[in-house]
Length: 182
Image (cartoon, rainbow, N blue to C red):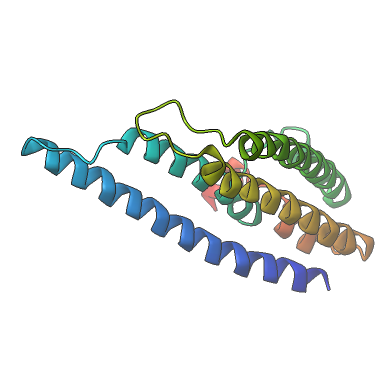
C-alpha cells in the first residue's frame, strides 16, 4: 500500500511538473515576444506582473514535485550520525513538521482568496488583474503540496511500522554530500 501511494504521488507530481514547465515556457515566450516588440517601438505590457504571477503559481505547484524527488533542503548533521532507526525517526519528524507547516499555509491561503473573491479585488497595476484569478491556482498548489506531504508521511509511517527503513529512507530521507559523490 505504501509503495502504491508513493508511486502514484510520483506519477502525479511528474505530470504536474511537466504542466508547470509548459507554463514557464509560455511565460518565457511571452517575455521574449515583449522584448522583441520593444525593439520595434511597441510592447505587450505587463510582462513583469504576469511573470510574477506565473512564478508564484509554479513555485506552489513545484513544491510537491520537490518533495517526492527529495529536493527540499534539510540540515542532517544529527541524522547522518544515527543508525537506520534513528534516521527513520529524524525523517519522520521532519516530514511531520513539513506536513503541518504546509497545511497551515494552505489553510491560511483560503482567507486571502475569499477576501479577493468577496471584494472583487484587482491588482493595483495597469492590467488590473482579478487577484482571485491568480490566487486560486496558487492556493491549489499549496493544498496539493499539503495533501502530498500527508500522503508521503502516511506511506513512511507504514514503511517504518513494518521496519522497512531502506524504503522509508528512499521515500522521505535526504541526500547528503557523501551520497551525492557516490
